[in-house]
Amino acid sequence: MNQKGSIELSINMLVVIILSIIILVGGVALMYQFIRGAEETKQVLDSKTNAELERLLVDQGQMVALPLQRVELNGGESHLFGVGILNIGGVGNQFKITAELSQATDKFGTEILLEDAEKQQVIQLWLFYDTSELLIKENEHRKESISVTVPKDALKGEYIFNVKVWYTSPAPAGGVQDSQYGNTQKFYVKVK
Image (cartoon, rainbow, N blue to C red; front, top):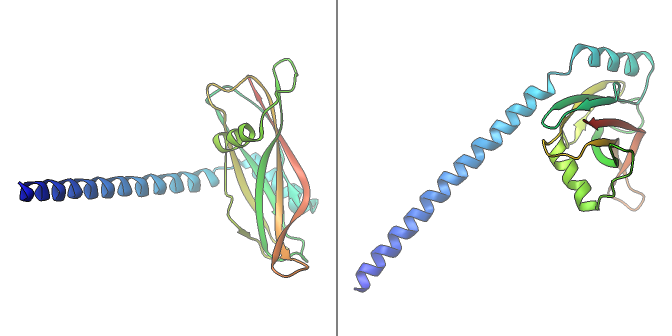
């Protein structure tokens, strides 16, 4: 009887290990699919956005540019915003982009009061962009994209997002700190 229990325990352990491996492989495959989708999304900034970013960064010398800032979307639709960064020098070559929900108003213009956790959820569910460190050499520029996908059940109204670019610099007490680079940019998503 003790031998039978040992065999059952061994079989159960083997089943758990096999299921764990299957879940791990599925998770890795899903991660690669997301990465591949992100690379494809990154490369599809339309020509109008690319031309406007080139004009703002190269011709006008703006440190941070975000053209074509307003869009109207229905629930379930997506839009791609382009952000350009020009490294004018003196701040190193390590940059990072952050986006945050600044304000939300309903279709009548009344502010929707959202808790911090709700704001974070809107950002995580709606926005997709490269949050890793970006290397931009001095006097060079780079274009990044921020994809906005409005959930089908989103409240109708206008959502205002702040986009900031940060550079890494040495901290006075040692170590490093992030400092804002250029002006805060805004984009507006009107949900119909």
